[in-house]
Length: 314
Ligand SMILES: [Zn+2]
Image 1 (cartoon, helix red, strand yellow):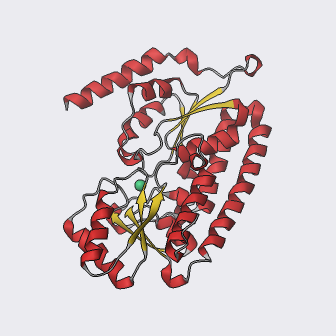
Image 2 (cartoon, protein in one colour):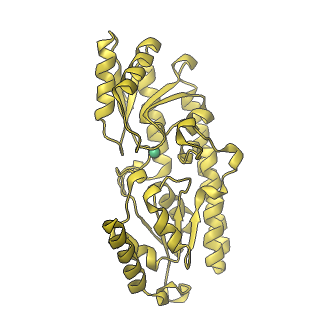
Image 3 (cartoon, helix red, strand yellow):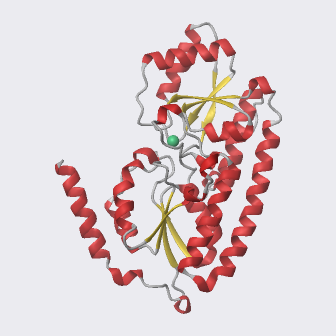
């Protein structure tokens, strides 16, 4: 209780100290840029692509860090306080940031990018207690819907550059369309009975729906779910019975639980290999190919396909 009180106070002080005068329209004539803060790397990347040279975007959740558990640091709070626009995923992905994002929305344009996604296309996994599955970026076509939302928010704040945001968004959407086609062409290489994806947590539901994969996660949709021995055994039985050749570790989730599954499968007389590390809720390091949404998605599908069909080289 005391910790909650301290963090609320800290948020208040930092917002106050960051000052409202910083929130005015950036002056393009002096080279001022739009200050944007985004939560996950996948959103930061869309903002970079659509905002181009007009926008200075800071990502909050670093590569390899799990957004389900992420608590904003005092520095994050300061950045949020001086941002012109804040973008977040929504659908309860940033579960620990709900309060601060609500607070920020009182005087800053604060946008949940998944608000753009048609509700009829969102999934509601039974174990997520009536909430929508937040992992929308695994279906490239669904993620494309967030591009327009980001374009419109940038244009709303900085109307003078609407044409720039529009042309950047169009170019990026063309690249994403090509990416979607690439994922589909890679999936085609896997025999349909082998299209099963087993990972640490249940984040590939949209991927499964869009690209025709059966998906199984050891944990539920959120990494907050506890893993029990029964869960490990149940998944191990599934893998052994279906003779699934590979399962996948995630960059933002501990590999320990999947190692336990591998051992349990072995005790049932079948060998499953760890097919590689997938970038799931966080991208790769900035400056590496996997540090962008497009190359992270390409890397993931390449890793999945190569492991499942038994190719050794990427
Ligand atoms: Zn997740």
